[in-house]
Each structure stands twice: as C-alpha cells, then as structure tokens.
Image (cartoon, rainbow, N blue to C red; front, side, top):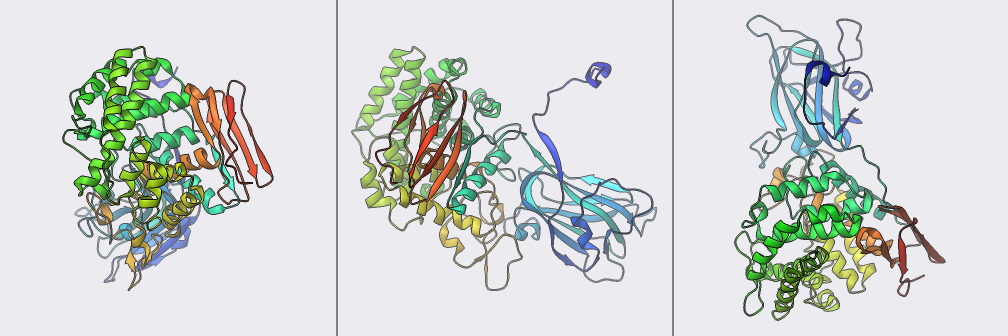
Length: 566
C-alpha cells in the first residue's frame, strides 16, 4: 500500500526530477577559512556526531573580516542549495543559532553582491538571505537559477565546520532527441547551450527565466517552442503553459497585458500543430481563437496600418522608438493573420479564415520603414511585406551582429537566410551568441549587446580593476545590472535555426508527415544531426562530398538540394 492510499494524502505529481551535484571548484575565500578544497568532494550531506576530519571551517574567532567561501557548480542550474553544518562553537542559550549569508549568483559578480547594490534583488526567487543554523544541521534554500553559491559566516567570534555545500538540480528528465554536430565546435556548443537554456526553463510551466522572469509569457515562449520541437519533440509543458495563459486572459484582453502576445500565442499553436499534428488539441482552441481573431481583424486601419491596442511591446531595443515598433508589429500582425487563417481553415471555420486572409491582404497596403532596426525588418520579411534581400542589404547586414536582440534573434537570422545569406547568418550568430560563450555563459542571456563585451571580464571570475562587469554594469529597461537574467529561454534561437537552415529540416505538413529537406553547409566541412518527429527521428549527414537524409516510416521527405554548396 502506497502512502497516498494509506494516509489519504492526495495531490498533484511534480513532473520534475532532482539530482544532487557538487561544486567543481572553489572560486575564492575571505577571512579565515581552512579546508575549502574539501567542498569539491562528492559525499553525502548527512551529518554525524563524530568522525569527520575533512571539513571546511569558517572561523570568525578574533578575526576582523568575516570568513566566507564562494563555490562554482560548473554551469548554470535551476534548483536549490543545501549547506550542511557539522560542528560549531559559540552556542549559548541566549544565542542558540549562528547566522550566515547564503547568496546565489548567475555570475561571480552577482554572488558577491548584496541586495540593493547594482540593482541586485530577490524578486521572483530569493537569492540572498540570512540563514540560522545549529550544529548537525542541513538547510536547503528555495528554488532559483544560479551557478555560484556564496556562504559568509556573520556571527562574530564563532566558527562553523561545513560538511558540504551541495546543489540540487531540479529538471524534467527528458531525452535530447535533436542533435547537431559539425566541423565547427563553436556552433555545436551554441546548439547545445541553446537547448540547455530552454530545458532549464521547462519547469512545472514553461518559464522565460529561472532566476528572474519565472513567469509564463505567451510571446516569449515562441522561440522556446521552436527549440523544444527541434530538440525534445512534443512535451506537455508547452500545452500546459499555452492553456494557462489562455485561461487567465479573457478574449477581450491582451495576454500578459501585451496586445502582440495574443499573436505570438496563435503562432505557437500553428507551430505546434505543424510540428506534432495534434488536431484534437488544436480543436480545443477553436472558440477562443476564433473570437480573438474576429476582434483582431478590427485592428487593421483603413490605410492598411496596424493599430493594435495598448501594451504595444515588440522588442526591448525598439521599445522607445514608435516607428520601429510599428514596423515590427505590422510584420508580426500579418504573419499571425495568415497563420490564423490557416488554423481556422483547418478547423472548418471558413468565414473566419476568409476574414483573416482579407485583413492580411489589407496590411500589404502599408509598408512601414524599419528605420534601421533589424528586428522590425526581420518581421516585415516574415510577414511578406518586405523583400528579404532588401532587408538584408539595407538594414540587417549593417554592423554585423550589432543591433541584434536575443528575443527576436532567431527571426533575424531566419530573414538573413531567406535572403540567401546563409554564411553571413552563421557569422552573425557566432559573433553574437558566441561572444556570450566567450564570457563564460553556459546558458544564453535575457539580452546582449556585443558592445558590452569590449572591455568585459568573464562571469566566472571576480571583476579585476579596470575591466567592466558584464553582468553588473550593463542591461537596460527592466533588466538593468544584476537584475539581468543570464538564463532566458527566448534567447535559444541558434538551436532551431541550425536545425532549419543547416540540417535543412522544415515541416510542411502537420505532424511532420511531409518535411522539406533543404540543407546548407554554410562553409562547414561536414555536419550531422537529428530532428524529432512523431514517427521517430530524422537523421541528416552532409559533407562537401555529398549527403543524405534518412526519415522514419510515416515521414515523406521533399528534397531541395539546389542551393547546397558541396
């Protein structure tokens, strides 16, 4: 008999797993610390009364500076930290506990910086707190996103013996079905980092960030979905999250308070249906989506210009420029109306589909200038309003990766590819996302400007004098300084882009029943990879001598090798 039945304890299963991990290195110590190297030993967190000789001791007895240690778990994780205290001195009835600071950080800089300095905060997930401990105690923190953990003894004239500082990784135990390997290890690392970034955000719901932004954003999850489909295939967290946003938003309102996010939510349903072909789930959206679309066709002006209501967010870099924002929304709106028409047609709602197509055609009458901004230009291309080659030549190619954003970086790369500039797209990707990797990233960030990196030190070490703090000195809008998230799922664009344009896999019939195979080596010597479908995984292998695509039974491959440079 199981616990639930025996004691009548009922609840909802947690879809996630837990795995205990240990520090890979000690970054630094302060004050009087001995045995810090013992913290990297793999051993149980269970404390005992006697028998330990290999502890780490933080000792404030007679010391002016508090004893502290900073450890590195080797990569960004989502989870908790447990500090196990074996022994201590200084216990009295008047002072039965000893206090220490536990501060988590996505960078060394953040782990060393208290709340209130450089915009460091505890919103969304507490990462800086004072803990109380007695001897033979193991205290686990709340969940957060971090790579580094800082422990500082703050009670004077006492010491504590630490048995261990361990982390518990909390994650969905799912298979990485999609893969990408090539002659360029930087691209391989980029693909894997993008996949891992999204994986960490696949918690009970699909979040945007694991430290700050542990929320379900209908727009932000669109690139995350593209990554999930390319790497993991179908996963219930997507449907659960799409339904959550729908259920808390009346059809008369804007999802997350942003009118464009209803459009992104629609595009998610289109992409999910094309990737996995779940008609029953798509049909569940019919009434809500139909009502929403009939409201949105009214936001096309007489001149063909979009006039979406308040909450007119498009992307952070364009958020202060009305003309750029309008251009981006124009392209996004048309793309969404076309996809909405396709969905309504599939669901047998021909009248609503016709109204969507008519409104999309009307949007072609107004062709706004992207005003030099790459993201609006990319969405104008995606919406069929601007020619891809014109967008590349006049806007996107200028300055290379300068002016990219993490949120719409995927669509910007897609626009470059649609212009036939595949090698240029790869170079931009390496300059932008590759620069984050050079600075120590193991997950991709909420936003990034390549200019920030010019004099910056990596996130893995204390910032030396004369260098910029890449985490604490930059950022903008809602993500200034250390509030900036260094694990944001919307930044995962390299994974689906490499799957689509290098491996060359694009679903062209729902559920991958038919897939276009149109690969591009982009100057690589060779490339191999897999792409998940409901029928099994597609396998691709390419080199300058040739290549092939092997699909599982049930998947038809339409080959287009005309532009493959062998």
